[in-house]
Length: 122
Image (cartoon, rainbow, N blue to C red):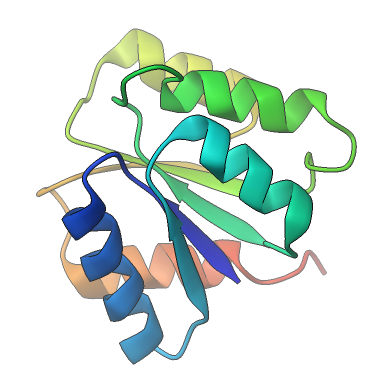
């Protein structure tokens, strides 16, 4: 399952719908704390996580995931309008598998990255 986390609910729902059309199971959360609560209650393999959110930023959520042994196996892809190099570097340091810039990639490219990340390690 992929959890799509974006503070704009319409965006999260649209991305989840596209994932479902692409043959994947997807749910949404609209803030960092709900995303963490969802992860604790459900089996999620991959998270598509917005970086710029009020309250907990995507990096805050990523740090919380990677510091919790029960959640740390979740593969996290940051999906953001920002290309802030310090944030991209920090996301990689924290363990994000990819940083996708909104508007820079086609939907098939985004779906390929998500499907690739959603596969269990060999």
